[in-house]
Amino acid sequence: MDSPISHETSLEAFFFARVEEIQSRRESPLSPEIEAYVVHMLTDFARRPAVAGRTSAPLALQYLSARERGTKALRAVGDRALYIAGAVPRSLDRTPVNVRYVRGIGEAAYRQVHENHPRLAVFAELADDFEALAELVGDAVEPEDQSPESLLDVYERWRSHGESRDARRLVEAGVLLDPDGSDQIQ
Image (cartoon, rainbow, N blue to C red; front, side):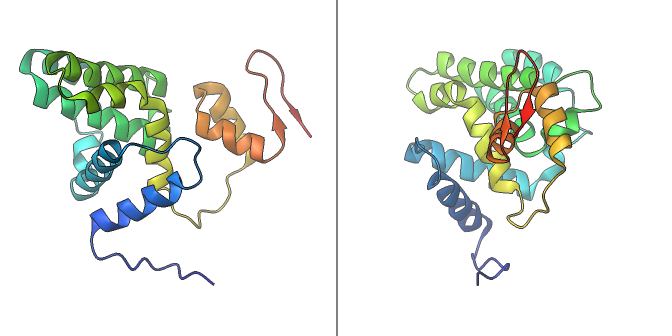
């Protein structure tokens, strides 16, 4: 029986192990550069949780300001958007924006970093794979022994936000999804 206690010696080791374990179940593995970037980003947000919190400036305003301030600010916006879209997308449920909007800002911020510095190819990859990376981030921060959510809650969230992680959970539960019509539980 697996122990619920993690034996990693640092946050980096913990997130590296989580990302590795999640990747082992995925069809397309991350490049070592992207894996290291995601592990570092998760560690940074774990150490400074207020950075992505509600007390921070609105993401869209932060992005507009970052475009004038440069690469470091754009990277921070991309990282914040990736964290929000992956780790806390439900926090957007009570706001006028949705997770697609946040993903769009994150993708644009990372793409702008790459355009400003073409040799930093990792940012093009972050922009191109943003949705899959957000799903990975969500899986990495989700407790392994989390009690199952109501299938109806997951379905309603999928209909509202179109999250691929929610779609995967529904399909695993036997729900046939039709984004343009009705769904049937088998």
